[in-house]
Length: 340
Image (cartoon, rainbow, N blue to C red; front, top):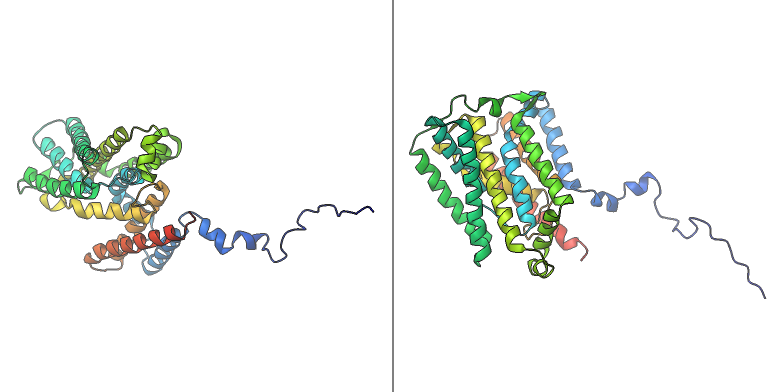
């Protein structure tokens, strides 16, 4: 007896209650899969609320002002994102900025050529980063402890360089710190290029893939043939170099370096907050420059909103700490829900 078979028809085996078309695209599961959807939502809510409350918030001038103010943070955050992806940490980048800015200002105020001061600042920043890398790599001391100690030391060095005086550079770096190209501040152009370069390195290069591997499991990375020691030293040297660049950028924007402007640890807190808010794992193995950029913009917008809405400046530190705490908890909850 022959048995008749029913030809296969596309879609016959699909459950009848499966959403189709736009409903499927907007399902909660798909929304959760959108990168940084929570961060983007919070940013949009803050922007809309502030724009409604303040007429000056959405102006071109204010937007460029916000982006210009976070340019130094963006350069530091780019390096920290790559370092944290590899399982490292550097709490001394802000203090490195304070020292390199002070040294560059001292040289310029003393009559030395501006290009020489910039080169010295970059080399000094790189050297300080390499010192952190050497201690972290060749000892068992945790990066958090090493770089926090370095930060405290460098804050003191910055005060010694100033010797209680404000070091002015006049208009030697005014163009770099204040002028624009095609309507965009030079500092913002530099920050965007650094973020873009970091994203490309992390996405398309062997160095970037090695950073992810080291952060995921350093022992396995060694067994797979990655020169972990060289990679770590390079990463810490890179964060130092970007700190030196941040010091030059800060000096150009302010036109001077003073004992009161060192504040290395508070600058570092804002940078760490942006990176963690953006989704980079504190344990290593995961990082994204796009998330870091969104975290930077969110913190910049919140600070600007507090100013425009006449809140006390003291609330800015409160907001950074609160957002960092919420982001750290949210990241841990997301990691716990993620499939293993």
